[in-house]
Length: 151
Image (tube, rainbow, N blue to C red; front, side):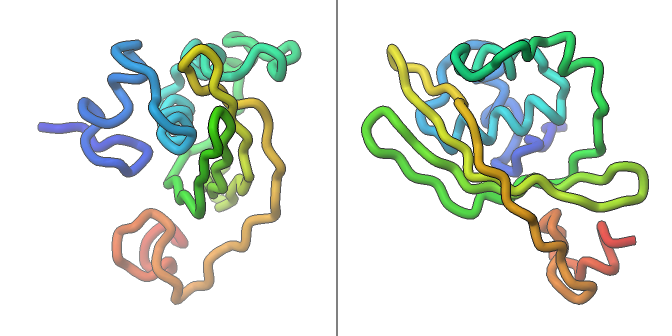
């Protein structure tokens, strides 16, 4: 049975696992963003540090990430992505539950490519609009929000 990739891009073995396993580098900023989201879901802290540009990490390390808190990640929605030479941007919303509370991280993330590898640098946060009760569910189930993740 195939494991669904947390980023929503298909089965994990053919989606984000090759990046997590170091079999090949992410070819675009969007692909790196998807693999980083999946790494958060799967708690692959070393991958997150390795793909975060060292000039922007400050004191962040695997131990700090492992310490949590760790919300229940629900879905990743890519709103827009772009590349211009060795720089790129990805606008995304990452939905999660913290206890019984639904929330989201909405960010326009900046990426840079150095020596053929893409790195996350920093992002500009936005306030994510929560879905209405009758909106399609954020997880892509096809159900109304109130009948799915909104419970």
